Length: 224
Length: 243
Image 1 (spheres, each protein chain N blue to C red):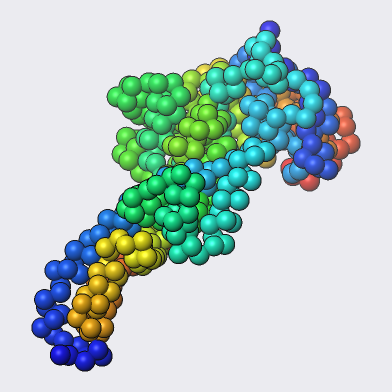
Image 2: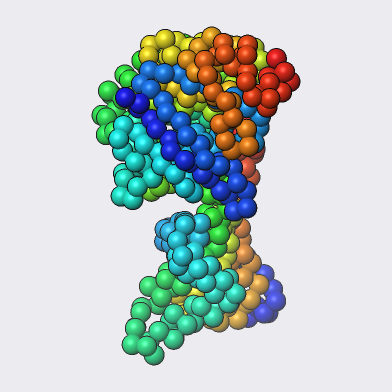
């Protein structure tokens, strides 16, 4: 029997396929959540700056509510709390929902900043050519906003990959939970947890390199 | 009959009183040049004409349509009024060609190929060869950017063109190429309202010169009257400072 604090290379090789499967689940949940988070975030990000008496307040309340509470609590509310209100969701759906709502709030703030980074003259020019507000947003403002915030969105995706480890509390077999299960069976903590950390890095490092390269490119020829 | 009629136009931004009762008429084919010190309300006036800045009070009448009335389709009206800005305001994520084709396609629903033909035609009209079509705004000089902006406005086939200090942000050696395009446009009979500090242009191309200060029209007349025999002391003072 190997001690709890020892690294077991044979075990490490043996559990690699399991960890890889867990990493894929992590990637799947983070990708789905960043996608839905982008949709939610774009809608609420636009709401925040729109000229309307109610929508900006609703968007601000949503952002404050989500950013002011822990993701872990949000996940548990969606999975354990909603059934009390008669809404039963499978853990996978609850997981994606909670993560999407959470990242949506952070992305809404990123989108808002992105829209505000586009010079006001762009909207003037678009409207003066006969575009509606919606067309100007869709074809002129948002494409430029997204270009400016691409690095921030990349960082948000990286954060989401790491935060999705909290889904382990609702029994989703993502990377962290896979590692914990191996620990529970083998009584070896070092080997699976180091493997887990390694797999997270394999996902986040290339992404942060990509973000860095993009940041340089934008910095390179930002037009006035 | 006049194409544009402005009646008792007022514009306030909070406590800032920018326009204090402007009345003017512009005939079809006329070139009206507006001069005056900065902060006199010239740019705000132009932005009120196409309702980018809704007036606080007064009427803007284009061809019998009151633009300040409720229920007017401003998106339709704005297609008839082209405006060119001091800062060019080209869409920075699009090429010169796409800057022109985008509004044609999504506002006028012109098919892609036809829109591109129109765009090339207007790029040539402002003196830009086809090779510039694929350039992004940051790859063009200020003068070239401004000419693309003029082409973009012209491609919508407007009846009235507004120019808001379009040469003020340009390097001195680039001013002429933009003024030449405007001069040609005036010769072709385009109705134009031009806010500018280029007094040579005002004298040679303008049919009428308006001097604005403090949010009102102080004096107006034929260029030779304004420049050689200004009646109002404020006009005289302004002209003596810049000429």
